[in-house]
Image 1 (cartoon, rainbow, N blue to C red):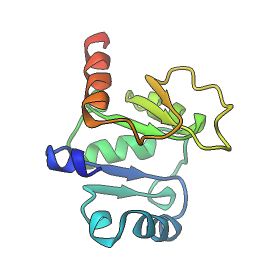
Image 2: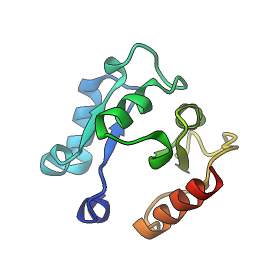
Image 3: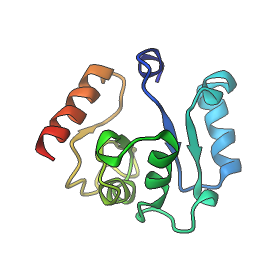
Image 4: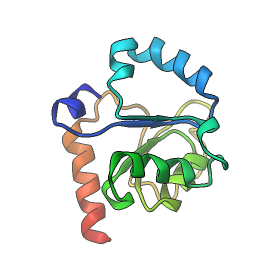
Length: 133
């Protein structure tokens, strides 16, 4: 996240969970200052339909002033992957123990975690997706 922010890349968090529970989680995970640096934060309460409907990602792209093809989603579940693909966005997976056995067909990359994934890796995935599109 810090690497992307330093490069001037806009960041959004889109969760199907309720806003209050996601805020609590993100403030604990990121810290209040980093949470407040997000360019967009949407939760399940902000859209009429939940994932796998792409509404939450389409709304985030709109608020960021980006087209779907210029967005890269990091997801942890097949339902989120389906929402990202439905929004016309490239998606990489960082699975959890509870989602590791899901079928992530359509993901541009699959990682057990993001500890060794750098901004340049994600930029290359997005660039490849733009060329293919």
